[in-house]
Image (cartoon, rainbow, N blue to C red):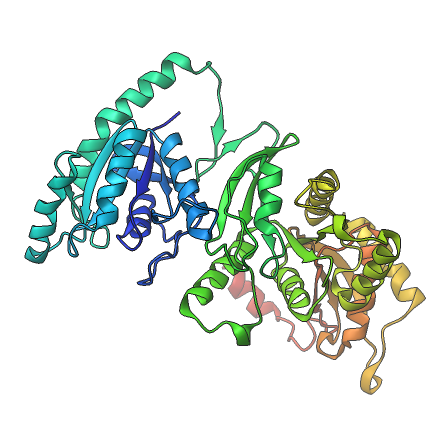
Length: 477
């Protein structure tokens, strides 16, 4: 157990910028527009020799109802309750706002330890705001600049006593166990090198955050009827039915032509980054409007990135004729996404939790296929049979000879075929080989990479002059 620090404050005071500064990466979206952050984002922070968990929160709003702002405030209050220390950030350049005084009273009653920080305090223009921060009654404000890294030494000194207390408490209460962690600080269970990386993607309002909340068993992510609530790609560590996973919740991806605002572009870019780093991508569709053009683009993107793909149909509890609907979905899937033929198609309800066991099994199966390796001997016996059943064409009278085949990589499976005239091989024959690999070696749904390389028929020694006795004697000397 390490120190947990929650960064709180009203919108646009620089909380996400400070979060990025502490974790050393640009994980949280940052923009001049207030209210960018909505969900809680956790990261492993480093400040000198101090290691601790930092939580980026949404800007504190005065709303207390069930509106979007009210739900954001509840998540922030939850972060305050779970943190060891709250870092209350105010804007030193604009001075105190009425909301700052309201939230200072809330933190004084609710949080165990509060550190006050006056951000954007570089230069003489912030002097008045720093002095005004004393009025909050939370002690001496730390003068910091999250953007320029000023004041981090003072923050380190303020956190050290709390870090020592957290370590002592952990040593007294924690059982003696050896738990391995990966480079991001996530726990790694025995038998796995690191947690399985899973990204949940789809169009806005498909139910991605609701699904992850149901898997976690708690309302960890912000949800609601509004489309496009999620902005950041939030990663969460979980042990799901004995398998350690890191699940990424991503922003809904609309058609590129409709994405005009800078903030939405940043959100979509963050989601695409999560897809690139994932191992399994769950493409979540709405049962009422499945396989729209954007759904197909998202699934094709995951396949082109070489990720293992699972297609999940959400809101299945609202369907009346489930058998007919499922049959139609399978036919549409095979027709519209032939590059993912055989990929798992799972029906579920994120609201009720039905179908989550099937989703877990489909993710593990897709991951296993994604890592599958075939021996060279098996591949060459298989290649001989495929060529005998359907020989490659002879464009311009030049016969293409397939000599041998080997698997060059996994994740996804990649194969190399040595042949003559690879540039003249038609794409249809490549698909014939890929579909054969998928069927005969039980690799449904996973992207398969097939590379043709040239192997010349020419004798490499042809045309070379034989060395005479005098040249041989000279060479031996």
